[in-house]
Length: 140
Image (cartoon, rainbow, N blue to C red):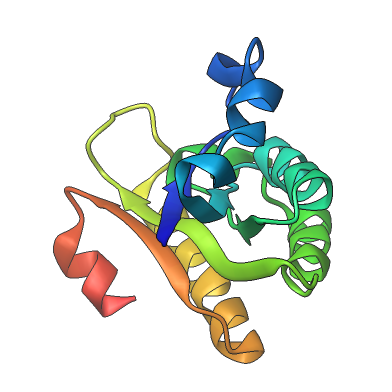
């Protein structure tokens, strides 16, 4: 059995052939897929994939480069989505200090911790993105 543990099939790169590609996964030995949400929009599209394909599961989280979309209301929405049956992890969450245009380190750390606490509260694993932030990632 092949279990694809980190996919982004909701990405626009797959718009032209997503259905064809996913419909052939199981016949090619890929029995389970976790599609990773990393923004509010990709969490929504990941949820749609979990409804459409019985072998697709989801992870819901906000990537450090996309935390600008996260506020009190969207975090409450995220909290509810993470509780859905086919959501198996919180992620892709973490810290990314590589790109200067990413949100400030303090904001990244705050929202990373919030999402880690959400995962802990619900007993879910986390999928962590760490780029040039090793010490802070371990601290969180």
